[in-house]
Length: 82
Figure 1: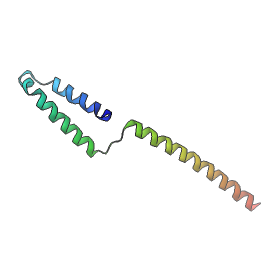
Figure 2 (figure 1 turned 180 degrees about the vertical axis):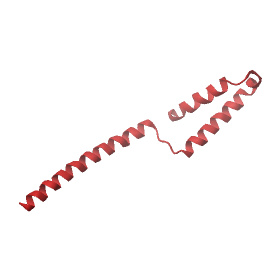
Figure 3 (figure 1 turned 135 degrees about the vertical axis):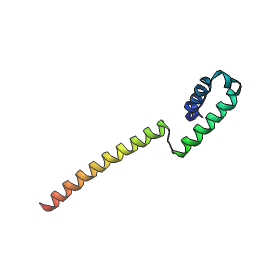
């Protein structure tokens, strides 16, 4: 549920700035804000920062390995031509 902490905080902040006449509906509106925020964020197919960082590390390692393999291949091709 840690990934929804920001949604919870935003829903609370939205409910807190309601005009005085709507304060009696605060709990209901806060639930509605929360539901709308979650529904829209799910459609965006977002990932957590932790998952993004892990994938960025995997990509960096893969790119390094590719560069190393390309260099080895180039060296082998030069060796074969000689």
